[in-house]
Image (cartoon, rainbow, N blue to C red; front, side, top):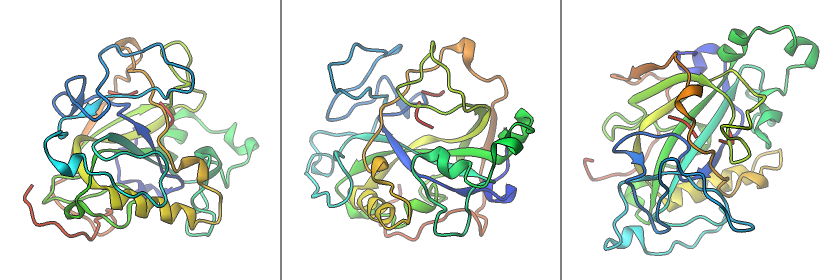
Length: 275
């Protein structure tokens, strides 16, 4: 995998979207023992879904039904179908072939942004390692709270790096593929190999942070309306298919290019699919 910060490989975020529950699995952080307003899933968790039902993933351990921060409804203005108390896994696809620094940097679907400046003739000449070095995803997991103590205003730019809050500090890295509920242990993705960098911890984030993200997505030149709601989650990858090249990066200091968000706070405080 590409173990650098993506900006160090001339990659920029080209999309942002999220999944209901988590596609990845981190024991004690987001797993089958977490909880939320709609319950959780077991391992393995492939279920028979009712018509129109979205396949969900694992939950974090923050949810407390007796704390109104997890139960008080939020008046959503821009995001669709979101719920306070729920767990969502956010993905920021990055690409070295994106329209970085232009009005078309962010695009939906994600692969439009990933391959924006890459023609098929050039793509066919690339080796797998070339692709893994130039295409990657940041993944970070959140439980939504109705509490602006956890407000971060600029989620569209990438994951949150906040040493004090322990955000973006303990990162798992490996090569994988794109994700989503249409992929499984029987149906593979054609978009591979790509680098994944995933925060092992689950974090609280305000509903207003997500709604601001959805507002920012609406302001993009490309139509991102198909990413204003949570997508389904891929079933957990079986051990036979898990990459054997996992790396770890524990960040001990911030870099000026890491995405550190301005926010107000007063408190101390392995892989499922759609990308």
